[in-house]
Image 1 (cartoon, helix red, strand yellow):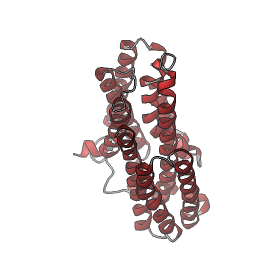
Image 2 (spheres, one colour):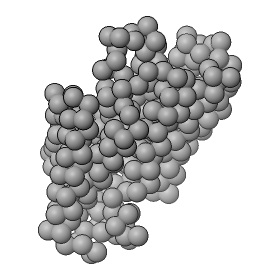
Image 3 (cartoon, one colour):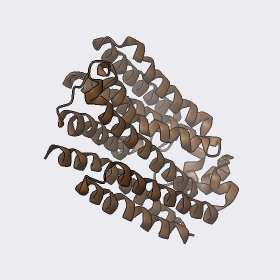
Image 4 (cartoon, helix red, strand yellow):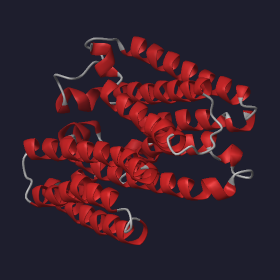
Length: 303
């Protein structure tokens, strides 16, 4: 069980759910043309999960000092694994993930796209070793990496067929693009809250995060203001594009907007570690409910 916690299996399951919803719960369910066969989609899913798991491992390797302070009961390096063994796991996961990605691209005759897996892997490595120490930039980079789990399905499932089926695919592609952007936005907000949680360890490790520069309470209040912007953005999106889709609109308001309002209230007055931990878990729940809304949208469009 320690190994599965080590590679953040809960986060990996969220990636699996997201990609299955996009491919089967949205594109296939609406009988839209898709480039990925069942086999190639499985390869894409495995490659994505392995590379993401490698990203969590390299992040832990570089966070030994801060994790000893922030999460002493959850630190797996070097207590359960030596750093050298952990790095071996990182290399194995990365090589397997990139290799499977190359295999998928070769089977689809899309070898030019294979470099995407190398780029994502490299981005996660650079983030863990360098970019994480940069205020805002590190948060943005890891949020882009998270959102890529949606964008990469668009790239391999829809782009190869776009010239032949442009009329059928242009609107679904826009919808999935918007979901990717919202996933990026929510994860960016969660990264700010996670920085607040990890302030003590980050300070000891010499990382200049936003809470260290602004202070914990100010950063928490800033996150509340960012969430307010998100709320109006989502409401504007519902008004502009989903006004006629009553059930999806109701779901998004109830499952995403209302919890974000609750987040704003709690973040505005948060001043203890337990408050920040709660806010982080709340945002993770909102992200899950937001992804599930894609299934709700599919049902309303289909029936």
